[in-house]
Length: 573
Image (cartoon, rainbow, N blue to C red; front, side, top):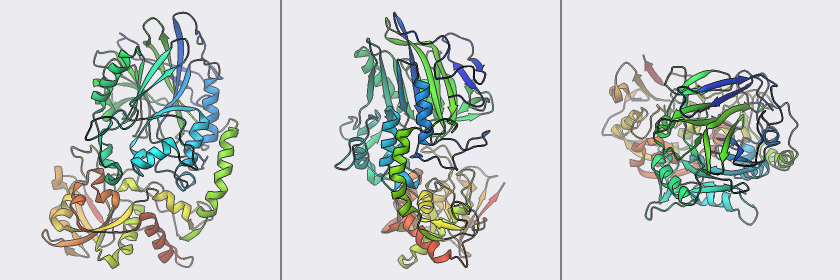
């Protein structure tokens, strides 16, 4: 149970001038028990935290789950469970935690059963607590409650989902448990505060979170760290579904990643970690799908560990620390973290295999149905800040599906495209329902609205970073709609106002157009607030159904669908 490239040991030492980084050679230890560890008597005991994040229902050991530097696929619940079990061996004070997005945007095998297989998998894997993430709200708060507590046919999660900053907007009280206390034995207690990002309300469908408010992460952590202290719990860990991006330049934050690259850190987690109360001993983060183990100074100037374990169960984090019985706290100078890639050179976990064997045939019956044919790979972009063929194809499908409703153009959010449509996936050239579903798993509706030319321009300008979002998101556009993006200009001027064309004709500011978007965008999701102003809304099919119908109509075995050519957006740089 070790990374092929070795275990990076990142230690946040109190009072140290710099982060101490040591590298243990491959095979230097095994069985999850570190040399010199294991004392559990007297004043101090050794704690172990194992952490994952952004699992997104990836229970199956799919061939598409790869990791840089590894020739063979990685991940899969059968192997993640085994790695975690091996890591726990010899550890008397161990718990397994998560930082949200365990479900939602899942592959077909989990999504088609409303992510129940994933919850069963996590239960069997030994996850004891998780924060909610934005994707836990994909199907609305009522469905999240069902996931947590179950129903007549489903037992629900064995672990609590925490949401300290998710409150009733009228009462201000949390609608989820704000924290959970792990009582190991002999009075050893650790408090876990769970939160999703404050911006969750901007990136999920508004209809499912009506009446909920998502509050500031720093203020919330301070509030509940104080409450835990009043209960005699001084050891505090934050599980936060917000993260950062490793960068090559020196930002003053010492980081390590599984490939051995020392990096700096950027992104929202930096400001949060630098301002979060020193009562918090370490932060397990997520959301950005990145892999890092970093040290970020707390407000008192003391180094504090901040971790993230990539996504899809490809990596897990191990955090070791010493707990002092007298102070009832974690000794900050002993906190050590490392990330391990989940290789498949271990035995498959039998409980996970049983879950997969149960759901696999049921999913295959529905998912293997061929809906159409493609001539080549039709892919997403390398980032969400670019035009890409699969996004264009989906926009075309939504326009075609709603033309009887008067639709003239369609716009698609890049984050709603969750997988590539690959020629060689399964039988070459066949596009199955399972593959189509995995591309668009959110069950959004296609919605046709009235927007003026001025509102369309505003929506395009909202692709740029703003107060509600610090990243660029490029809307994918249907055939016949074109415009120019001039990156040499500043601010919203980058979207060249007089370049907007529909079928070659200029978009007129005060003229009304019928525009198709999905229900997520129609609610102003991803901070595209202009779409929420759309009038004369007409709801149509589910987006995945519209996509399926388009592929069936235009992707025949004799004339399979090709990837749309790029260039609907002209980028000047």
